Amino acid sequence: MSFILITGANRGIGLHLCRHYLSQRQNVIALARSHSSALEALQTHYQTDQQLDQSGQFKVYQCDLNQEESIQQVAESIKQQGIELELVIHNAGVSINESFGNWTQKAFIDNYRVNAVAPALLTQALFSQFAHKAKIILFSSGVASLSEAKDVRKSALDSYAMSKVALNMLAVKLSNACDGVNTICCAINPGWVRTDMGGQDATQSPEETVISLTQTIANLSEEKNASFLSLAGEPISW
Ligand SMILES: NC(=O)c1ccc[n+]([C@@H]2O[C@H](COP(=O)([O-])OP(=O)(O)OC[C@H]3O[C@@H](n4cnc5c(N)ncnc54)[C@H](OP(=O)(O)O)[C@@H]3O)[C@@H](O)[C@H]2O)c1
Image (cartoon, rainbow, N blue to C red):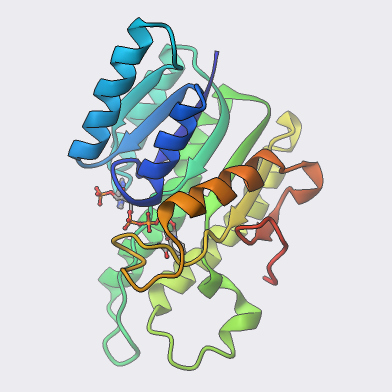
């Protein structure tokens, strides 16, 4: 039985992704650092449905991606159950931002730890569980494009952008590392989405974003391995 694993599943895009895949009767593993009533309601709903044998399985694990031990514990639990992963979506992220003049080591490190280091360590820890042609999706950002950054004169997203550039490199490094098991790994910019991170002025609702994202992910083929893609699956300039 294959599962889809989604990080940062208690709110925002991650929660909507869980909802979407569960509604498609897929088996889902949700990783969440914090409790949320929305995730709990989803869990209750799908556990009830399971009794009627109408849906896939839904497993929720607590995991703080700032803590290496927490990443190892959740991976160990998944391994012990012999769970196979067909899709891993590294959705969890933070956007801690300070403009030049106020930069701090803490903000840089906090962004890097969740946005770039955690997806690397979690993928490494789960490597043995990947199905043949498993997909590994890293949620990047338009601000991670080096070529486009030259035109964004007033962006205040410095440390966030740098952490997502590191994440983009991870897409390439993971593609090399996972070569033997034929995974497809890419970085996708989900666009500007109305969540806690994106704010209420963002142009896309989480619902419409998830419809496009899941189509793009479903259509990913091997030639998209190690690429940086838009929501629609078009290449973005590194
Ligand atoms: N929204 C946008 O416009 C936009 C644009 C481009 C890219 N993205 C990317 O898309 C992804 C999802 O964004 P979003 O808008 O849904 O963000 P969001 O609403 O702020 O949600 C962020 C999620 O990440 C989780 N998270 C943060 N730190 C964590 C940690 N240490 N351990 C475990 N989970 C942690 C949060 O959990 P807690 O509740 O525990 O904090 C939450 O579930 C992010 O990677 C983001 O960079 C978003």
